Image 1 (cartoon, rainbow, N blue to C red):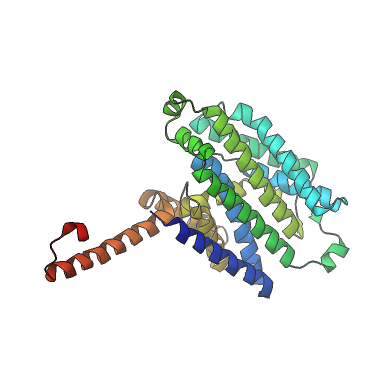
Image 2 (image 1 turned 30 degrees about the vertical axis):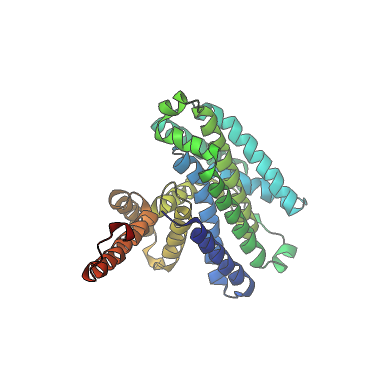
Length: 327
């Protein structure tokens, strides 16, 4: 098991490195990759609360990402201060998640997944018909545009999402979600409300996805309003979670970095074959390493620890040590 102090030190060191990169980094390509990684990691971590902690596989998670983006963008470009726009978007997403979560969470397993997928596709098509034009930043905003603002906003959203996930992992609420995930009937027998915990997970994951959408709205200079609602955002988030490790804290972040960097470094000429390659990777990870990169790393650490322990035993035995309690 990982040492909590060591884990906290690692997270603090990574945060320090990313802050320094945002302050001194000048390469637009590097900063763009970093921002995309932060956004996908935040979206994947938000999905992990529902799918990894509560065991509810949602295929319509992009609906909340897009809702956070479009509300933030419309209010911000309409003259409202950006911070208030994000707060308003967060409120809208929470209300929307609460409204659609009540009927959707009545379904189970594949029916829930299909229901969320239908919701996501319906919202995407509706936005595409209602807002067919392009949303672009005004000329004045373009003159003042820098990567620093979107960078630190996306990083801040990721930090908030990771902190919430860490709190859930060790809280009574999070333990209740995991109990429902592992055995819903057994959880109900000990007084854990399955529907209540799934509802809280649904709303929390939707709200955090909405914050990630707000960072996308602030970062993107020009895009079609229905783009953040596209189902590809959901599948990329799910892929990042499974590559990194479902139900873990670091998994979605590691998976997102692996996915974004890998996608960016692949030759641009292969086009749609990127989807095939990552699809094959997803199948390989699920079959060969169900716990993702995090589980693989833990296995390696355990094996290296056993090797060192074995070496220590051999040395003591050769020296004639016989006290087992001292080993």
